Image 1: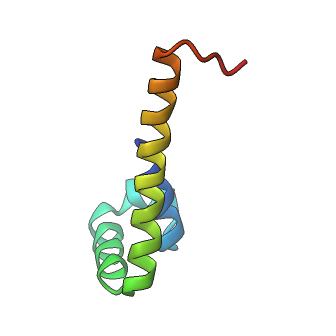
Image 2: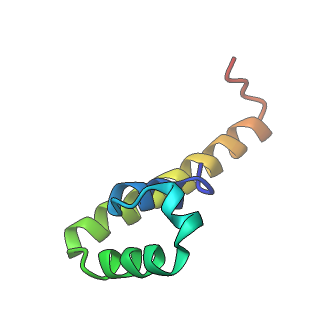
Length: 72
């Protein structure tokens, strides 16, 4: 999930369609950069907390599986 999370953040922050990243990457990435820079501290905190949560969930899952816990 931590690999997919940056894509989710881009979809949340930017209102450019995925097709535009392929057809016009220069303007799309420029717009994304300006949107990311204009985020408030609270927004950055929320998004970083989600990333940390996804990473910690993966670590917890690996630890539990290594100790023999089976989810299903």
